[in-house]
Amino acid sequence: MRMGTKDLKQALVGWRRHIHRNPELSYKEYETSEYIAEVLGTFDGIEVSRPTETSVLGVLRGRKTDGPVILLRADIDALPVSEETGVEYASLNPGVMHACGHDAHAAMLLGAADELSRMPGEIDGEIRFIFQHAEEDFPGGACELVDLGVTEGVDYAFALHVSPDYETGYFAVREGAFCAAADDFRIRIKGRGGHAASPDTVIDPIITGSEFTMSLQTVVSRKISPHKVPVISVTNFHGGDAMNVIPGHVEIGGTVRSIDEASRVRAREELEHVLKGVTAAHRAEYTIDWDIGYPSVFNRTEAVEVTRSAAGKVFGTDKLIEVDQPIFGTEDFSSFSQAVPASMQFIGVHSKEAGESYPLHHPKFTVDEEALEKGALYFVEIAKSLVT
Picture 1 (cartoon, rainbow, N blue to C red):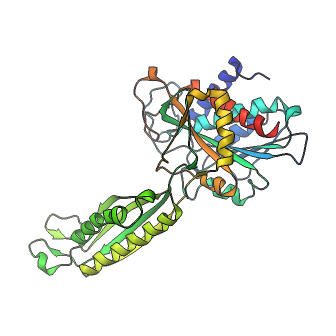
Picture 2 (picture 1 turned 180 degrees about the vertical axis):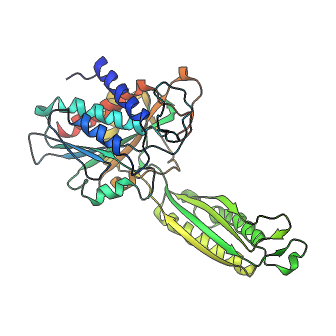
Picture 3 (picture 1 turned 120 degrees about the vertical axis):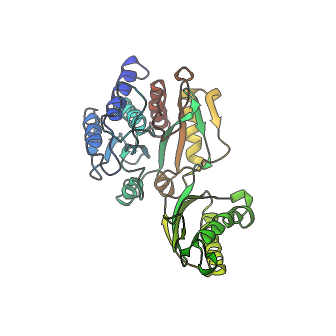
């Protein structure tokens, strides 16, 4: 086995740069998935299949058919972002970029599959390598794969996400809720428009909508426990197109991010209660539509214990960072974490030498490729601890 050698590093960089150079959006990862399937097919003993048109499943079976089954996941889709990194392997697809590190996720999992395929005689059980489509686009590829049976018989599921918030060589661990659920809303408030010089003759939807927007803050501050408080954000407010006319309606949109499922439901109920009361007070009418999004990723204790042990061996226990708060971004790995005990964690990918750190989804976001090998070896160590 060539673990930790220069060859592995070179392979990881090559895979990552190929995928980065050729990004594809959610549900359109045709060339990406074909490339991954071809690479997986060169590894001994891995059975390659295509659960969906743009996802790839590799299965490595050990000596015992009744041994543990683990699932290792990487997402492979890109974002509608125009790249501004200036790297020589920048996106060749205008307006599309791997700005969330999925290229690195795929490369690290390919590296793990390569390494583990070299030790078939040591494996008892089964390892499933899932290269998942459409993490960035609701309803997401994860729920589709779970529905197709990818998690049937699985004992544990693991995933990594790159993070520019941590330096290369560090590994961030979170037990319990890892990230938020996300539910988006679209509201239309209908009043009665008229001339701006005669506001007494109208039912002003701008005033109504503004009062609703401000009153939403009471949902967070006064109606839900501060220990389980969600984040409610109005992100767009549209109405009117003339300077001397009060419009007949406004449209408001936003998102509710929550960790606790009970507060998630409560937040939606309270938002609608506020909307109903404010519009009634102004004699306006409303409609509201919800996009119920991904639930929260939940890292189960038994899976996180495996994570801490494996990460400690690869990164060193002094490089493990215990994260005390969940993030309020979303991740459709939640579908896997609802199906089986799971652990999703952050791997640091920011190099001080690179200068400024850009956040995920930024057109200048970059990954320090020195982090790739440790990410791959983390997955290998997970497998060694459970199925060898």
